[in-house]
Each structure stands twice: as C-alpha cells, then as structure tokens.
Length: 174
Image 1 (cartoon, rainbow, N blue to C red):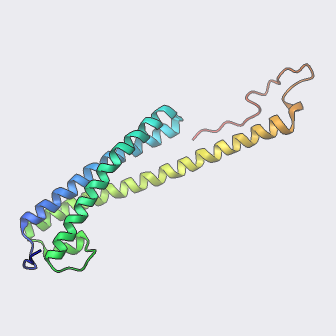
Image 2: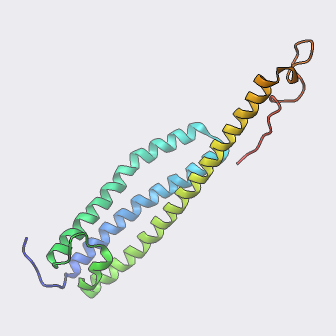
C-alpha cells in the first residue's frame, strides 16, 4: 500500500462519515428493538418478546458488519498516514482535511449518542430481566412452600381448595 502525505483528503472524510452514518442507522434499529423488548417484558408478552428476539438476531449481523467495515477503513487510513496499528476514529481527525473532519466529527457525535442510549437501554433491560427472574423464583418458592410443605393450608377437610386465591401467592408486577 502506498503511503500518502499525513493529510487525508476530504473524500476520505466523507467516506468515513458515511460509514459512521450507516453504523448509526443499524444501532438505531437495535435501539428501537431494545425499547420494544423493555415494553414486552413489562407486559410479560412472551410472543412479542420471541418475535423481537428474532428481529434482533436478524438485524445484529448488519450492525456488526457496519462496525467491521468502519474499523477496516479506519485501519486502512491509519496505515496510509503511518499511524500505529489499532488507530481509532478520533486519532485520525487531525489527519483529515477540514471539510472531511467536520463531517466525521458530526457523524461521530451522533453515533456516540446512539451507542450510549443503546448501552443504557440494554442495561435497563438487563435489570428488568433480573427482576422478572427474581419474581419467578420467589413465586416458585411460595408455590413450593404452600403446596408441598403445608398441603393442609391449601385444602379444607372436605378436600376442597381454600379461598385464598392462587395458592396464596403474592402478586407483583414489573
């Protein structure tokens, strides 16, 4: 690969900005799916959660491919400007011509906001999933305690169920 001057052309900046925008579009799609996942978990809508997971699996490779394409191009530009291996977009900024640099900075700021929102939503979903699992464990423990450890508390002497509702389970919602 031939080495150019330390200054990269506006064209390089525009191409990098477009790769960042493609990556952002993919992450925004995943962010919408993460918002839906949160809503479906709160409503305990198993069918929509399954469909959402299938959508996530279908769109995640596109986001990964967009990130990989951007990283590959950044490595290429880094090599052309004699920057060390593993160069990042921000480290390339001083090497970009002013027009391309502005486009890259704007696209990078948008991508940073999107990825931060996606990371935050994924963390919220993880906490909600943990809560739902803890609730399920608690309900299972209550059922076990009530139904197995104290069957006399569930049935009267005529073998009819008591009027305590669903096995005496305390109901909580997310």
